[in-house]
Length: 189
Image (cartoon, rainbow, N blue to C red; front, side, top):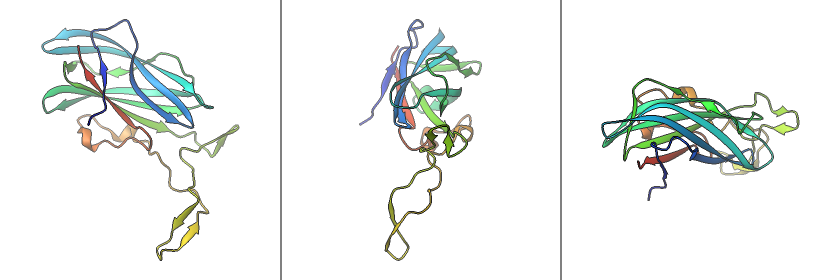
C-alpha cells in the first residue's frame, strides 16, 4: 500500500499540501504554490513558493532552505524537493525554492519531498530543550544482556542530511530523519 498525496501543477493560484510532520511536539504542514508551463506530457516548473504552517504544539518551526532536484523515475519524469526546517524560526511566510532550469515533471510522475532538520546549535535555546537531537530512552541493554540506566544522551537523531542528498540520487537511497522524513505527491494534472 502506498500512502500518497496528489498535486495539481496546473493550479497556480492555491497553496497545496505537500508535506506534514511533527517535530518538537509541534504538528506542522508545508504547502506549495507552483508556477509552471505545459510541456509534452507534463509541466515545466518555473518556480515554487513554500509556506509552513504550525498547527498545534509549543514550538514554531520554519523553513531555512529548499531546493528542487531533478530525478528520473523508471516510468515517468519525477522531481525531488529538499526542505530543511528548524525550530524557533518564523513560519507562515513565503519561502522561494531554488529551481534549476528545465525542471520537468510529467502527469503521473512524483513530487517527492524530503525533510532535513537543522539543530538549534546547543542543548538549550532560551527555555527550549533540543529534544530532537538530544534524548534518552530510560534503559538499554548492555552487551552482556543486563539492563542499564542510560546516563548520557544518545547520538543525534534525526540526522540532517540536506547536504547529503545530491542531484540524481535514487528514491531508495534517501534517508531523511527520524519522524516522517518524506512524503510522496502524485502529479494528477
